[in-house]
Length: 345
Ligand code: VTB
Image 1 (tube, rainbow, N blue to C red):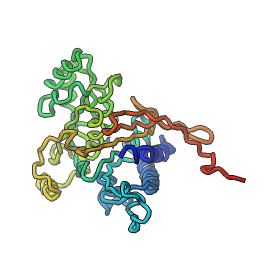
Image 2: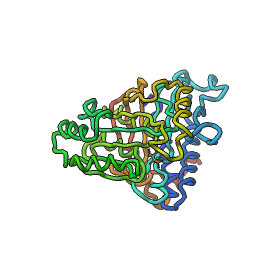
Image 3: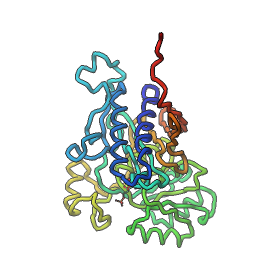
Image 4: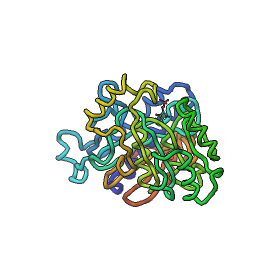
């Protein structure tokens, strides 16, 4: 998958990142998202692949593009067999977030990214538009920390695994009222808290690399973003656990349905019988091969955002592959004003 699709997938996130970055700081998050979606979809549809969106912009009725179930790629056309080779006809599943952290982009804040994860068919958990309790931690703590344990216990374990004291740890938490108790507990346990307004995918991925000075992500964010984070962290051999939140008493904002009962029913219809199950990274991204790619829209800890200059732009993309066991930082100069094809006179 990496060999056949790698470079093209990079271009997909690069194009989405560049499109959103043009709207960076303009205060219009919907437009920043819309242009990223359009750019991502256009580039995907130029690739010789047979893709299906499993995590996208929503169900078909509310999202015109990159909706869940949409088929993308040249080889999804009816007459594909005539011009696609058998490798390209293998079905792949794609999870996208063309502008992760739309608010960050709209207000010129660090950490927004154009991200996607791909795997073979069935390789990514088709998470509902619910929330998810998340725990991300570095590879050294994988399988030692546990979302069922208290934050205090996990910080002790984390400190041991990373061979340092608790007060040297930094935990990222999204700044939300629902996290007030969690934040208090982390501080009382002695660790330091980095509050973010948005963008927990980037925060989770930071846990997978040493040197970012981020040692854990705790708290509740969106479930689809959880799957994309899990894909990246699985490739990195880092820790990720997620548990769906379906009770509106826990998270009250718009994403979640009317009542706990209605949400449970929806999960059951989707085939999720055990709504309280704790999923590991390997379960959320269970495919044999998984590839993650993310282009910085605004700069973050790991990757730079898009920088425009006369006639072009420079992007940085993180590509993590389970197949080659690599994390690549791809630095690209895009020459907008150069012709794509050389004219022979
Ligand atoms: C979460 C988080 C995302 O939006 O979904 C958040 O996972 C929305 O949370 O990274 P609230 O509904 O509590 O505001 C992001 O921050 C950006 O998509």
